[in-house]
Image (cartoon, rainbow, N blue to C red):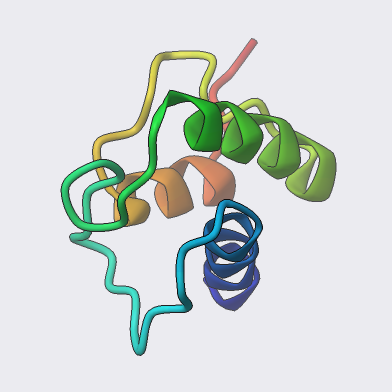
Length: 77
C-alpha cells in the first residue's frame, strides 16, 4: 500500500495539488483526493506500469482500498 500511496501523492503533486498528511483505504478519488479524469487516467497508466496489473480493466475502483485489493489480487484474464 505504501507504493500506491506514494504514487497517489506523486500524481497529486504533478497536478499542482499539495501532498496529503495521510491517505486511507476508504478515500474516494474525486471527492476526497481531488482527482479529475486526467489524474485517474494517469493513475491507471502508472499502476499498470509499476505493478504490472490493469486494475482499471473492470472500471474505476471506488476507493483507494478497492484499488489496493485489485493490485493484490489481479482479475483472471
